[in-house]
Length: 232
Ligand SMILES: Nc1ncnc2c1ncn2[C@@H]1O[C@H](COP(=O)(O)OP(=O)(O)OP(=O)(O)O)[C@@H](O)[C@H]1O
Ligand SMILES: [Mg+2]
Image (cartoon, rainbow, N blue to C red; front, top):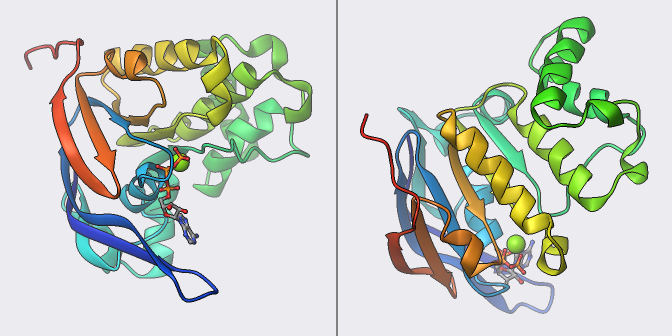
């Protein structure tokens, strides 16, 4: 379903120093799989998700989504892939502050070519699944952190992407939100959604099929979690 093949990503800062955020990372995620990525702050987890999601390409190595070599696509085809084939939940939410909850969730569906009416109807369906109908007319600033997470998930899933890439908000560290976030993802995975989630909690990572550890840009461990995969 999604494969990173020896991807390397280096950042050069203004003072000329370099950081190797990803160092020859190879990772293959199957359809229906629920993979948790764990590792210390700065270890390259978000960089990996960005690379997998077609957002920020590696300096070397390849990413395949299904049969598509993601970074061989031109900018507009890659943007189209990002809009429809991949759902992304950002660590910093990135909700649009001047759109209400329904329109935030509907927005990617409109970008993908749906009419506003159709998009809003899909968004309502998502909000029902997320238990967020009562907040439909709220703006992001009027939501709790957990509610913002749910809107972020709704927005990421509204176009029914092949894979959901979710970067657990850092705010989840100090609350029950992390558990709720993983509960929701588990539920969607139970319906067949392929998921790669970055989580800061080792305990929550156990709830996935598989736990991939990243340290200093390298995969240092890849082992089963507690969730068992259904035989297909
Ligand atoms: N745009 C950038 N410019 C320069 N360095 C960057 C950039 N983005 C990331 N880095 C560096 O790359 C490394 C990996 O960053 P990344 O955001 O992937 O870590 P992370 O594992 O997601 O951390 P956290 O758990 O804190 O979110 C870090 O050392 C970071 O400082
Ligand atoms: Mg991060």
